[in-house]
Length: 56
Image: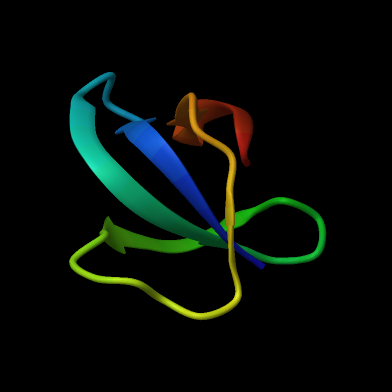
């Protein structure tokens, strides 16, 4: 599942400003993330900050 967020809080506590695309599995576990460079298909806009520490 791909979702877009304003920012991402990394496991070490670093805040990476976005917009950010976060890809998770069906249980919400983080698979990957990257900065949004251009429109991407099938991305749900959430906003807010994605906290990696809560996705494990």
